[in-house]
Image 1 (cartoon, rainbow, N blue to C red):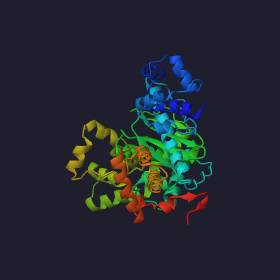
Image 2: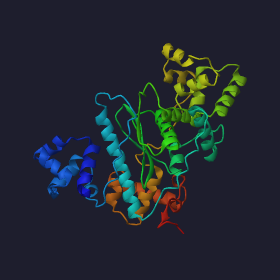
Image 3: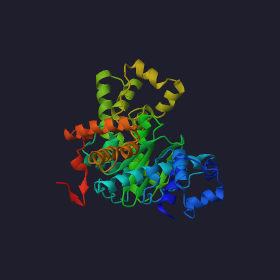
Image 4: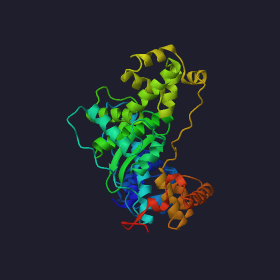
Length: 395
């Protein structure tokens, strides 16, 4: 199959459009349209423009001469099929493939390799998978400079600097996230933008657990998990819990609160949850597991009918500002896009399409970010630190 035919298939799937609908849009038979997607029949310029409009993509993307990334087909890991789920998954998979395609296009244009060397996978241990996950979480926190008690500020930016690409976009509500290791590119995570910030943060940590445990596999995580979790899922759950909510830090803040007040109420627990960037439910269950509060505390909160917002207001707690960017692309991608645009290796139109902004907004964004990079402050990353040209560190 030729590259344009491959790109037409990928773009159609990303748009969630059927072959029959696309064929009708072009006023042709479905067999003729299938012949185009198979590369048996050449697509005419007017048909290509019509499909670009239908798929809400750029003509230049469809005409790229390099093949799109290898299909990102997550292994569903024995998840019971549910009605209507496959279509949402197909769209999510196609989106992730498109994001990777844009990243590879940028790297090709600037003749650079932007990803740091990925850390090695931890050596397996004979201890239980949950204990192993706890140890890995502690090691990762120390390696990243967070120690045994500090919260992780921008988890997405932290992993970006680690060489893990985290993309965010709207997905089917049943999907929490996808993860895949793509040859010659690296490990990718796609997170559902529709979910609350604390849920997105948990999903990122959970998928990072998969990166450490079984990065050579591909998978999808659903909002409603399977009843019997395999070993890799148990690891990812335990890793996320210990990574985001370290035992020493949680216990210390709980005891400090108790010493000051002689009691720890739901508002106090919510305050600690805010500090670590997790939901009240996650923190209550964590404290239950540590024996800091009685078992069934979360069930009691649910049964009381109390709303989180009401608890927050009664405790004098303001809404926590989300520290994570919700841009589709991670920081490193945006820096590379600005670098390619400012060095005229891509056009303003291409730059606009790559960062998903109108041309005027893209130009303003690029100028502002270039200024910030000159001050060595943009996103905590410098352009010269993010690029390795021709396999050599940039001078």
